Length: 302
Image 1 (cartoon, rainbow, N blue to C red):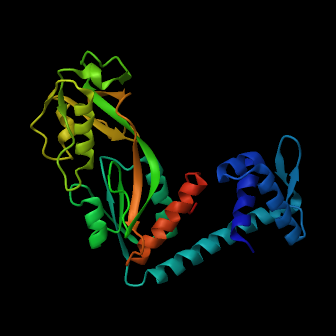
Image 2 (spheres, one colour):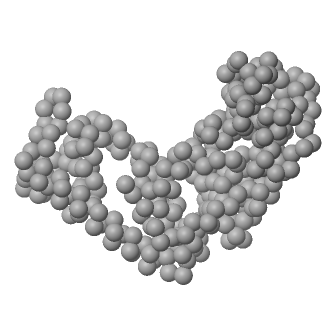
Protein backbone atom coordinates (compact mmCIF):
# COMPACT_ATOMS: atom_id res chain seq x y z
CA UNK A 1 0.00 0.00 0.00
CA UNK A 2 1.30 3.46 -0.94
CA UNK A 3 2.17 5.56 2.11
CA UNK A 4 1.71 8.83 0.18
CA UNK A 5 -1.83 7.92 -0.92
CA UNK A 6 -2.74 7.15 2.70
CA UNK A 7 -1.36 10.50 3.77
CA UNK A 8 -3.28 12.29 1.00
CA UNK A 9 -6.49 10.57 2.08
CA UNK A 10 -6.03 11.82 5.64
CA UNK A 11 -5.36 15.38 4.44
CA UNK A 12 -8.36 15.44 2.08
CA UNK A 13 -10.68 14.03 4.74
CA UNK A 14 -9.49 16.55 7.34
CA UNK A 15 -9.76 19.57 5.04
CA UNK A 16 -12.92 18.47 3.21
CA UNK A 17 -11.46 19.81 -0.01
CA UNK A 18 -9.36 18.50 -2.90
CA UNK A 19 -8.47 22.08 -3.86
CA UNK A 20 -7.09 23.00 -0.41
CA UNK A 21 -5.19 19.73 -0.12
CA UNK A 22 -3.76 20.12 -3.63
CA UNK A 23 -2.58 23.66 -2.82
CA UNK A 24 -0.92 22.39 0.35
CA UNK A 25 0.84 19.59 -1.54
CA UNK A 26 1.67 21.91 -4.46
CA UNK A 27 -0.02 19.78 -7.12
CA UNK A 28 -3.05 20.54 -9.27
CA UNK A 29 -6.48 19.58 -7.97
CA UNK A 30 -7.06 17.56 -11.16
CA UNK A 31 -3.90 15.51 -10.62
CA UNK A 32 -4.75 14.88 -6.97
CA UNK A 33 -8.33 13.89 -7.83
CA UNK A 34 -7.22 11.47 -10.55
CA UNK A 35 -4.57 10.00 -8.28
CA UNK A 36 -7.06 9.46 -5.49
CA UNK A 37 -9.65 7.89 -7.81
CA UNK A 38 -7.02 5.40 -8.92
CA UNK A 39 -6.24 4.70 -5.24
CA UNK A 40 -9.94 4.05 -4.51
CA UNK A 41 -10.14 1.71 -7.51
CA UNK A 42 -7.13 -0.24 -6.28
CA UNK A 43 -8.89 -0.74 -2.93
CA UNK A 44 -12.23 -1.60 -4.53
CA UNK A 45 -14.10 0.77 -2.21
CA UNK A 46 -15.37 4.33 -2.34
CA UNK A 47 -13.89 6.38 0.50
CA UNK A 48 -15.10 9.89 -0.30
CA UNK A 49 -18.41 11.37 -1.43
CA UNK A 50 -17.81 14.44 -3.58
CA UNK A 51 -20.19 17.29 -4.35
CA UNK A 52 -19.81 20.82 -5.69
CA UNK A 53 -19.05 22.34 -2.28
CA UNK A 54 -17.43 19.74 -0.05
CA UNK A 55 -15.87 16.30 0.17
CA UNK A 56 -17.19 13.99 2.88
CA UNK A 57 -16.29 10.53 4.12
CA UNK A 58 -18.50 7.64 3.10
CA UNK A 59 -19.42 4.96 5.64
CA UNK A 60 -16.51 2.87 4.39
CA UNK A 61 -14.32 5.95 4.41
CA UNK A 62 -15.07 6.62 8.08
CA UNK A 63 -14.01 3.07 9.00
CA UNK A 64 -10.89 3.29 6.86
CA UNK A 65 -9.96 6.72 8.24
CA UNK A 66 -9.14 5.43 11.74
CA UNK A 67 -7.34 2.38 10.36
CA UNK A 68 -5.38 4.64 8.03
CA UNK A 69 -4.15 6.74 10.94
CA UNK A 70 -2.92 3.61 12.71
CA UNK A 71 -1.16 2.43 9.54
CA UNK A 72 0.61 5.77 9.20
CA UNK A 73 1.71 5.72 12.83
CA UNK A 74 3.07 2.18 12.39
CA UNK A 75 4.90 3.24 9.22
CA UNK A 76 6.51 6.20 10.98
CA UNK A 77 7.62 4.02 13.90
CA UNK A 78 9.22 1.55 11.49
CA UNK A 79 10.87 4.40 9.57
CA UNK A 80 12.31 5.80 12.81
CA UNK A 81 13.71 2.43 13.81
CA UNK A 82 15.19 1.96 10.35
CA UNK A 83 16.78 5.41 10.50
CA UNK A 84 18.24 4.70 13.92
CA UNK A 85 19.88 1.59 12.48
CA UNK A 86 21.07 3.47 9.38
CA UNK A 87 22.80 6.10 11.51
CA UNK A 88 25.27 3.43 12.62
CA UNK A 89 28.09 5.04 14.58
CA UNK A 90 26.73 8.53 13.86
CA UNK A 91 24.23 9.33 16.59
CA UNK A 92 24.89 13.05 16.42
CA UNK A 93 24.23 15.83 13.91
CA UNK A 94 26.08 19.10 14.39
CA UNK A 95 24.16 22.10 13.05
CA UNK A 96 25.49 25.63 12.74
CA UNK A 97 23.11 28.58 12.36
CA UNK A 98 24.24 32.06 11.35
CA UNK A 99 22.63 35.10 12.94
CA UNK A 100 20.40 35.62 15.94
CA UNK A 101 17.42 33.32 15.46
CA UNK A 102 16.01 30.08 14.19
CA UNK A 103 13.49 31.27 11.56
CA UNK A 104 9.92 29.96 12.04
CA UNK A 105 10.12 27.72 8.94
CA UNK A 106 13.30 26.12 10.24
CA UNK A 107 11.81 25.58 13.71
CA UNK A 108 8.83 23.81 12.12
CA UNK A 109 11.11 21.56 10.12
CA UNK A 110 13.28 20.68 13.12
CA UNK A 111 10.23 19.79 15.22
CA UNK A 112 9.04 17.38 12.57
CA UNK A 113 12.51 15.94 11.98
CA UNK A 114 12.97 15.31 15.69
CA UNK A 115 9.64 13.49 15.86
CA UNK A 116 10.74 11.25 13.02
CA UNK A 117 14.20 10.57 14.47
CA UNK A 118 14.10 11.16 18.24
CA UNK A 119 17.21 9.02 18.77
CA UNK A 120 19.42 11.43 16.83
CA UNK A 121 21.20 13.99 19.01
CA UNK A 122 21.13 17.53 17.55
CA UNK A 123 24.11 19.65 18.58
CA UNK A 124 23.81 23.36 17.81
CA UNK A 125 26.57 25.87 17.21
CA UNK A 126 26.84 29.17 15.31
CA UNK A 127 28.92 31.60 13.26
CA UNK A 128 30.78 32.81 16.34
CA UNK A 129 32.56 29.46 16.45
CA UNK A 130 32.68 28.35 12.80
CA UNK A 131 32.94 29.74 9.29
CA UNK A 132 30.67 28.18 6.69
CA UNK A 133 32.82 26.59 4.00
CA UNK A 134 35.90 25.77 6.06
CA UNK A 135 33.93 24.04 8.85
CA UNK A 136 31.90 21.95 6.40
CA UNK A 137 34.92 20.91 4.35
CA UNK A 138 36.85 20.00 7.51
CA UNK A 139 33.90 18.02 8.92
CA UNK A 140 33.70 20.19 12.05
CA UNK A 141 30.05 20.95 11.24
CA UNK A 142 27.61 18.62 9.46
CA UNK A 143 25.08 21.16 8.18
CA UNK A 144 25.04 24.97 8.14
CA UNK A 145 22.24 27.52 7.76
CA UNK A 146 23.68 30.82 6.55
CA UNK A 147 23.15 33.89 4.38
CA UNK A 148 25.34 36.49 2.64
CA UNK A 149 27.95 33.80 1.92
CA UNK A 150 29.72 34.72 -1.31
CA UNK A 151 31.12 31.30 -2.26
CA UNK A 152 27.75 29.56 -2.06
CA UNK A 153 28.85 26.19 -3.43
CA UNK A 154 32.08 24.36 -4.15
CA UNK A 155 32.94 20.99 -5.63
CA UNK A 156 32.38 19.46 -2.17
CA UNK A 157 29.53 21.64 -0.81
CA UNK A 158 25.94 21.88 -1.96
CA UNK A 159 23.34 24.45 -0.96
CA UNK A 160 19.60 25.14 -1.19
CA UNK A 161 17.39 28.14 -0.44
CA UNK A 162 15.41 27.95 2.82
CA UNK A 163 13.69 31.26 3.60
CA UNK A 164 13.95 35.02 3.10
CA UNK A 165 15.33 37.19 5.88
CA UNK A 166 14.25 40.85 5.88
CA UNK A 167 16.75 43.63 6.62
CA UNK A 168 15.81 45.83 9.58
CA UNK A 169 17.15 48.87 11.40
CA UNK A 170 16.36 48.98 15.12
CA UNK A 171 16.07 52.36 16.83
CA UNK A 172 15.36 53.30 20.47
CA UNK A 173 11.69 53.94 21.25
CA UNK A 174 12.22 57.68 21.64
CA UNK A 175 14.21 58.08 18.43
CA UNK A 176 12.75 60.62 15.92
CA UNK A 177 12.15 57.80 13.43
CA UNK A 178 10.40 55.53 15.94
CA UNK A 179 6.97 56.38 14.53
CA UNK A 180 7.90 54.95 11.13
CA UNK A 181 7.67 51.40 9.81
CA UNK A 182 10.13 51.76 6.93
CA UNK A 183 13.25 53.81 6.31
CA UNK A 184 15.91 54.32 3.66
CA UNK A 185 19.60 54.09 4.49
CA UNK A 186 19.99 57.60 3.08
CA UNK A 187 17.69 58.93 5.85
CA UNK A 188 20.18 57.73 8.47
CA UNK A 189 22.78 60.40 7.73
CA UNK A 190 25.06 61.08 10.70
CA UNK A 191 23.81 58.18 12.83
CA UNK A 192 26.00 55.83 14.85
CA UNK A 193 25.56 52.13 14.00
CA UNK A 194 25.94 49.00 16.10
CA UNK A 195 27.11 46.44 13.57
CA UNK A 196 27.00 42.68 13.98
CA UNK A 197 30.11 41.53 15.90
CA UNK A 198 33.17 40.11 14.17
CA UNK A 199 32.71 36.32 14.11
CA UNK A 200 34.46 33.34 12.52
CA UNK A 201 32.02 33.72 9.62
CA UNK A 202 32.08 37.47 8.83
CA UNK A 203 29.39 37.52 6.11
CA UNK A 204 26.76 39.50 8.09
CA UNK A 205 29.20 42.20 9.16
CA UNK A 206 30.67 42.54 5.67
CA UNK A 207 27.22 42.95 4.16
CA UNK A 208 26.30 45.64 6.71
CA UNK A 209 29.50 47.53 5.96
CA UNK A 210 28.77 47.32 2.24
CA UNK A 211 25.22 48.70 2.70
CA UNK A 212 26.54 51.72 4.57
CA UNK A 213 29.41 52.38 2.16
CA UNK A 214 27.19 52.07 -0.92
CA UNK A 215 24.66 54.51 0.57
CA UNK A 216 27.19 57.40 0.55
CA UNK A 217 26.01 58.72 3.94
CA UNK A 218 28.31 59.85 6.72
CA UNK A 219 28.11 57.65 9.81
CA UNK A 220 30.07 56.35 12.79
CA UNK A 221 30.38 52.92 14.35
CA UNK A 222 29.89 51.93 17.96
CA UNK A 223 33.12 50.42 19.27
CA UNK A 224 31.49 48.56 22.17
CA UNK A 225 30.39 45.51 20.13
CA UNK A 226 32.16 42.31 21.15
CA UNK A 227 29.67 39.48 21.63
CA UNK A 228 26.69 38.51 19.45
CA UNK A 229 24.65 37.50 22.48
CA UNK A 230 24.71 40.97 24.01
CA UNK A 231 25.39 43.49 21.26
CA UNK A 232 21.72 44.16 20.48
CA UNK A 233 21.17 45.47 24.02
CA UNK A 234 23.31 48.46 23.11
CA UNK A 235 20.27 49.85 21.26
CA UNK A 236 18.38 50.06 24.55
CA UNK A 237 21.12 52.18 26.15
CA UNK A 238 21.22 54.44 23.05
CA UNK A 239 24.69 53.54 21.84
CA UNK A 240 23.39 53.62 18.28
CA UNK A 241 21.15 51.90 15.73
CA UNK A 242 21.42 48.17 15.10
CA UNK A 243 21.04 46.69 11.64
CA UNK A 244 20.68 43.02 10.78
CA UNK A 245 18.37 40.56 8.96
CA UNK A 246 15.57 38.60 10.65
CA UNK A 247 12.81 36.29 9.43
CA UNK A 248 10.68 37.35 12.40
CA UNK A 249 10.99 40.01 15.11
CA UNK A 250 11.39 37.53 17.98
CA UNK A 251 15.12 38.38 18.18
CA UNK A 252 14.66 42.15 17.96
CA UNK A 253 16.51 44.28 20.55
CA UNK A 254 14.42 45.04 23.65
CA UNK A 255 12.93 48.53 24.00
CA UNK A 256 13.41 49.21 20.30
CA UNK A 257 11.33 49.86 17.19
CA UNK A 258 11.93 47.80 14.04
CA UNK A 259 12.08 49.72 10.76
CA UNK A 260 12.15 47.79 7.52
CA UNK A 261 15.19 48.91 5.51
CA UNK A 262 13.67 49.53 2.07
CA UNK A 263 17.01 49.72 0.24
CA UNK A 264 18.95 47.17 2.29
CA UNK A 265 17.90 44.17 0.20
CA UNK A 266 16.73 40.77 1.36
CA UNK A 267 18.90 37.99 2.70
CA UNK A 268 18.15 34.45 1.57
CA UNK A 269 18.95 31.92 4.27
CA UNK A 270 20.50 28.87 2.61
CA UNK A 271 21.28 25.36 3.75
CA UNK A 272 24.76 23.93 3.16
CA UNK A 273 26.25 20.48 3.62
CA UNK A 274 28.81 18.23 1.97
CA UNK A 275 27.65 16.64 -1.27
CA UNK A 276 28.87 13.29 0.02
CA UNK A 277 28.82 13.62 3.82
CA UNK A 278 30.64 11.11 5.99
CA UNK A 279 27.85 11.42 8.55
CA UNK A 280 24.84 9.49 7.17
CA UNK A 281 22.56 11.62 9.33
CA UNK A 282 23.56 14.73 7.35
CA UNK A 283 22.42 13.13 4.08
CA UNK A 284 19.13 12.09 5.70
CA UNK A 285 18.67 15.60 7.10
CA UNK A 286 19.32 17.18 3.68
CA UNK A 287 16.83 14.88 1.93
CA UNK A 288 14.16 15.57 4.57
CA UNK A 289 14.70 19.33 4.30
CA UNK A 290 14.48 19.18 0.50
CA UNK A 291 11.16 17.33 0.73
CA UNK A 292 9.89 19.79 3.35
CA UNK A 293 10.73 22.79 1.16
CA UNK A 294 9.28 21.18 -1.96
CA UNK A 295 6.00 20.46 -0.15
CA UNK A 296 5.86 24.01 1.19
CA UNK A 297 3.46 22.88 3.87
CA UNK A 298 5.29 23.60 7.12
CA UNK A 299 4.96 20.04 8.37
CA UNK A 300 7.45 17.19 8.55
CA UNK A 301 6.79 13.92 10.29
CA UNK A 302 3.37 15.02 11.44
